[in-house]
Each structure stands twice: as C-alpha cells, then as structure tokens.
Length: 267
Image 1 (spheres, helix red, strand yellow):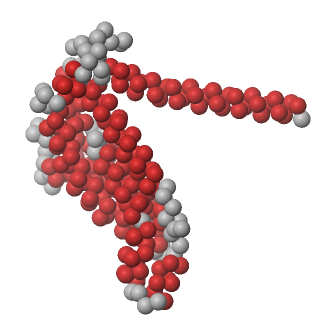
Image 2 (tube, rainbow, N blue to C red):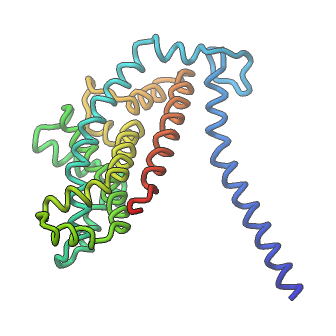
Image 3 (tube, rainbow, N blue to C red):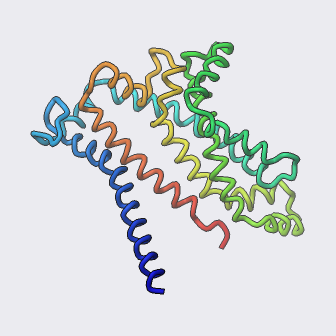
C-alpha cells in the first residue's frame, strides 16, 4: 500500500512538472515578444536597452500596417459570413440526418483541417487559375472560406449533441411546421455556438499566411502577408507590436468563443 501511494505521488509530481515545463515553453516566446514590443530602440535587443511605445507608434504611422489590417477586415467579414451560411446547415444535416455514409460527409467537411496547408494551397491555386481568380479579392475570400468552414462544423455539431431532438417533435405535435420548429428551437438554441464559430472564423483570418501568399496579387496585402513581407525584406522591430496586438486579440476572441461554446444550451 505504501509503495502504491509513493508511486502515485511520484506520478502526480512528474505530471505537474511536465505541465509546468510545457506551459513555460509555450508562454516564454509570447512574453518575450510582448516585452520587446515596448523596446525603445530601432533594433531588436533582449533585454531592451530602452523602453517606450515607439513600436506601437510605428504601427499606426508608417502606412503599412493599418492598410493591411483594414484589408484583413475586408476579407474576414465575407469569409466568416459565407462560412456560417454553409457550415451551420451542413452541421445540422450531418448531425440530424439519417442519410447513408454521414460519417464520410463529416470527414469531407473537415478535410481542410486534415490536408497540409501547402498542399491544399497548391490545389486551390490550380483550381483558381482555371477560374481566373488568382490575385483577386474573391479568390482569396473563396480560399479562406474553405479553410474556416470546418471550424463552424465542429463547433455547431458539438452544440447540437446537447440539444434533444424531442424538442422539435414536441413543437410539431403542438402545430408548428418542421422549418418553424427547426428555426424557432434548434437554431435559437445554437446562437451561442454560432457566435463562437463567427469569432473563431474571423480571428483565423489574421493568422492565415499560406493561402494569401499563394493566391493574392501585389495589390492585395493582408496583415499576415504584410508580416511575411516584412520578415523577408528585413527584421522590422514594429512586428513585435503587431504580434502583441494579435496575441491580445486572439486571446480575447478565443476566450469569448469558448465561453459561448460551453454555454449550456438547454436549461
């Protein structure tokens, strides 16, 4: 008995130590970038020799970053809305239908997450070149939409598993049509999951650099592409400020999204 307790204690300590080390490994680079964003010099030196808001001032004044942020917003909104229009009905169909091989449909819906991004981008390049969409705004919107639809399917389908089908049947026995029961009950209860999907899809556009480099032209520069171009031509210290703002935005949006996703759908 004593040996078992000792072994359990050792395992618990080992697991705790590993979790702490992994957490530090993930947090230290982010914290380093955050500290460097408040450096006052024109070069990246750690620890900084001076402090200030110079990097943030550069972001808002050099004419590169703000247009890129605006371009990301212009791409992100239609991408997110189209993904919801496609993904929400798809998730409902996959979860509630009794069609044959529904598992195959689910796998196809999640395929963009399973295929390596570079290989997927090459395939999209071939398809969009045939459609004359390379370097166009809608070509980028189409590509990014394909990438974020799985987020909608995953989040909405997970929420659907917590909504009993009997609620719709009860509504129909009381005189409601099937579409009215679906919209008035199921879709209404899915609102937190839909909002969470919206946020996850939207924030992902600020982190997608593979498709934009393959498919966009010189006049279509989103924030990830601006960061990539800056790193390719030289190390601009203001990137640390951009990265810090993106980390803050992503943290807030993901926290809100997962809070909504875990909202109890049926009281």
